[in-house]
Structure formats: structure tokens, C-alpha cells
Image (cartoon, rainbow, N blue to C red; front, side):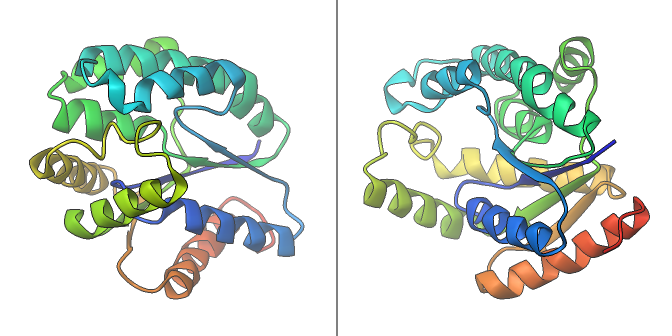
Length: 218
């Protein structure tokens, strides 16, 4: 059985950069690693992602978001994540179920009980072995994310959540921190304001310990 690692955090917290750096960490140790993301990771799930993130779809309600992201996750688990784990691969995912709890639950006010029951019913109650929460102030994260989207010309294609008001993102951040407090054995909170290399070093320390716990020669 492989190892399931998930990066979580608000918009612009630096997940993409740190996931790429962590892949190099695994390559140096000759450990099989698969990088994936949510929503996305399969052709069907990527099509759902386009609907989910496009700024023109601002009428989508939190409940519709839950249904969309759950459908994408079912496909992702069955087609990509579970087969890779069964093959002994380390799966590193950019967002997973905790993002649904933070965004659609804490910020979108969908019943947490409904979100958890949906995950158990449709997504085999799969949870990460380790969740790395990259935490930073909302103002910093949003500025980074909006700047990145402008530079890449993706303001419409992936800007729906960046368009939301600051209080929404504060609720997302506090939701993540509440989750990390409730599930402290699974979560590691990483301070994402520090330079990328320093953050990578801190993540590698956590990762090395997790690999040892799971019998890998780290």
C-alpha cells in the first residue's frame, strides 16, 4: 500500500511550488511518486474543474459545488488515486476532501455532517495519511493568487474563488485551522510566509518522519 499525501491551504499559499519541490525529494530517494490535483486528475474531472473554477459561473451555489467536486473526486479516486496506492505509489495531491470541508462547509455553510456522509458514501471514506496545511494571511495569499492568474491570463478560467470577498477567504482559513486542531495527528501546519526553500526544508523534515513511520527508508 502506498502513501497518500495532500497539500491544503487558501488561494495563493504556495501549494503548487511546494508540490514540485517535494517531487524532487522523492526522486532523489528513488521512491515512486504520482502528482495529481483536485478538482481534476482525470479527463472527466478536469472538465468538471473548468466549470467549477470559471469566473463566469458565479451563480453556482455551495451545494452545487459540493455535488460537482464530489463527482470529480469519485472519478479521481477510482481511476487514479486508489490504483496508484494499491500499486505502492506515493500519491501527492493538490487539495482533497479537507478543501471541501473548508470551502463548502465552513465558508459555504453546507452541513458538515452532509459533507462527511457524502464522502463516506461515494468516496470510500478515503483520507490522507498526511495533510500539509500551508497557512498564511488571507491578504498575502489572495494577492499572490490574483497576480499569478493575471500573469498567466487565467483570471476568467480559474478566478471564481479569487473573486470572492475577503470574509469568505477568512472563513476558509479558519476552517482549515479548525480542521487541523480536530485532526492534529493527520495535519501538519506549515507557515507559508517564509521563503520557498525554507518552507520546503520544513516540509521535508515532516515528510522524512512520516516515511519512517510507514516503513520507508527515508
